[in-house]
Image (cartoon, rainbow, N blue to C red; front, side):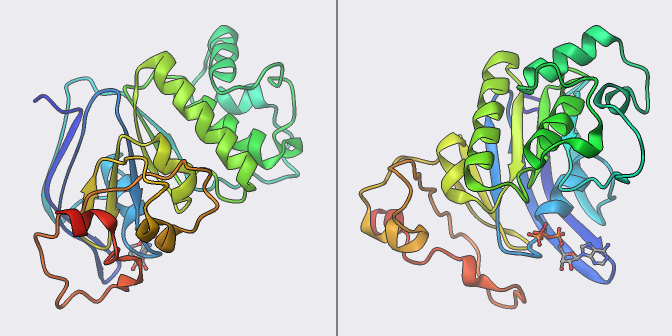
Length: 256
Ligand SMILES: Nc1ncnc2c1ncn2[C@@H]1O[C@H](COP(=O)(O)OP(=O)(O)OP(=O)(O)O)[C@@H](O)[C@H]1O
């Protein structure tokens, strides 16, 4: 297999809901792919299925042999009354050497924090500790599920810059879920728009000057916006998801 992960015809049920239906998807070595989509569109379901936490009702997930995946969850709650240093947290559930902990913290942009209490970290520092934990095993693929939730915009932008640095240093692929299009689009090689199924996908390009794009995503983007091509080879009929996220005015559609 040439891809790191190749997904074909994936359908996943969550409770009584068919959260994903007939999803095809792949990710290659070293690329940054962002999954966007409205609330409830199956983004987390896709991530959890890829890491093996959910079982599909149909379809196939093929992983490259020996694939190592690092996962940064959407949220992780740690009891604030529980005394636990960063180093101890990173050493759970399996023992990790002090050197490996320091190296992971360094890659995540945290220096000298190993002895700090988890409960005393800022939101941004906490996310970076989760990133450090995901980097401990030197992953081929780093998966981030809305990892910047709760951070302010400069905090998320800094976090995503760190992700780009991690990618260029380690050469790992990155698959991330985000609502913050304007922050992540410029950093993504490809974008997948999900709405229970794959609505559209493509390569981001800088289109700050495109009026249709500005109308869709606003103008306060400092030229860092990119666009994704729509491959509308399907119908939305019978789809009970909210398609408010669809991009009917997309500039590329006019050009296609
Ligand atoms: N544990 C669960 N039990 C029942 N239904 C669930 C469960 N988890 C998710 N779902 C449903 O599955 C669908 C997809 O949810 P998912 O969390 O994957 O969406 P999402 O795109 O990540 O949403 P958000 O942007 O709000 O995080 C939704 O309709 C959701 O209500």
